[in-house]
Figure 1: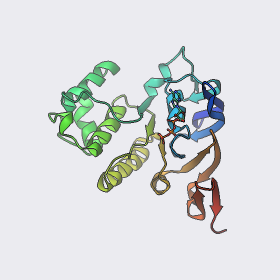
Figure 2: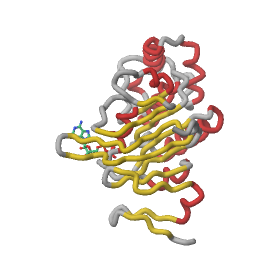
Figure 3: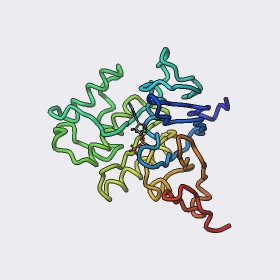
Figure 4: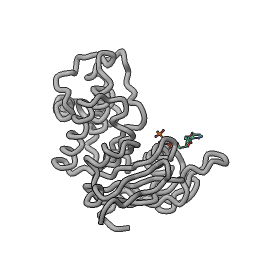
Amino acid sequence: MNSTIVIAANGLQKNFRQHEVLSNFNLNIPKGNIYGLLGENGSGKTTFMKILLGLLKPSGGEAYVCGNIVTEHDKSYLSKVGSLIEIPAFYDWLTVGENLSLHCDYLKKNYDKIPEILNIVGIPGTENNKISELSLGMKQRLAIGRALLGEPEILILDEPINGVDPKGIIEIRNLLLQLKQEQKLTILLSSHIISELEKIADIIGVMHNGKIVSEIPKETFAKVDFDFEKQFLILTQD
Ligand SMILES: Nc1ncnc2c1ncn2[C@@H]1O[C@H](COP(=O)(O)OP(=O)(O)OP(=O)(O)O)[C@@H](O)[C@H]1O
């Protein structure tokens, strides 16, 4: 495997009983890139991310993270990965600081980084706020902050702007660009909102029928339209 590829899928397959969700799914994500996984609801984006995180077992093929094959036996690679899958879950009756402290305990990290992380994700000084007092956008930012506590090399974010208001979307977008630029993180994020991925991704991988049907580099975003009704990409100009 090429050393600059930090996430890879090779002929990945996932069935839920008779339902084939991923089928000959192939993808390579270069280090330091933001890779946008674009697909309709139910196209298998979350399933792929869960396989990368060892939360689901593939039915066939292989997935690699930081050069390690993802298996059910060795989960040590997860220390290099921060993730946000589906709706961020917190202990609502505890404070922001208490929630992050619990995560530090789990990661065997000390609490020193908590104020800095809250600053990075744009919710400084909220240690004593109850989770129930936070807006969804603040919770999403907190969830990204929690994912950063382990000082990961890779972030895997499933629909991180879901339910976030326009101001929050801009803030999360800027945060992800900043994490890529300043911390050299590789970020895999999913969305079904094309315009959002176009604003931050280096590559958009288009999912359909359980596979990546097209990978579009940033330079080409302006030249394509995605027609999910008809399931194809339209080249709008040369
Ligand atoms: N544990 C499961 N058991 C059975 N079917 C499942 C399971 N998890 C997912 N599926 C099915 O697999 C398909 C892909 O689901 P997945 O959540 O990966 O899609 P998605 O692209 O992330 O969708 P969305 O944009 O709605 O989040 C769906 O049809 C879903 O119903």
